[in-house]
Image 1 (tube, rainbow, N blue to C red):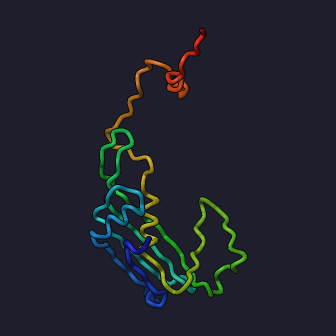
Image 2 (image 1 turned 135 degrees about the vertical axis):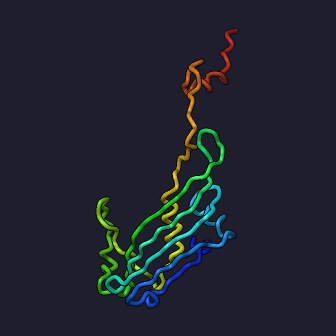
Image 3 (image 1 turned 90 degrees about the vertical axis):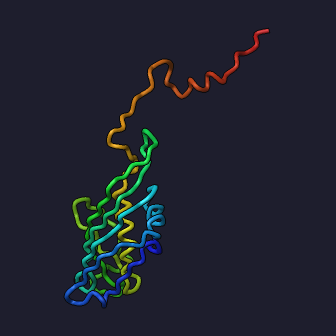
Length: 175
């Protein structure tokens, strides 16, 4: 997924003072990012990322924004929606003494708690992949234009799914 937004940082590049990045992928990458997050199109994609030392890894604070074009589920017309993802992640190298052992990495879900740290395979954080992933979480899976109103069909007949099948049924020949 990160091929569409290539932005990587090595842990050693973060340093003691941290690292601040601003990234705007090329407009040529927007279609691939749009496809990755499940929207029709994207524009004005940008991110601000702050990386700071955390234990023997890194803390990653980010804000990613974009304008997404989606298709309204009622009118089937395209419309633009602003997306904004704000998130914080923690990373630890695999060899870290602070990382839980491989066999103890059971996932316990606490909706109010912090996410557990990400364990890196090497010493590189694929910043672009995390930005895309969190933008995807902001996409409405059932988009609706603000002024779109669903009008149910008039009750002119039976709304049962079997009503359509009944039309196909031929009467039995009684002769």
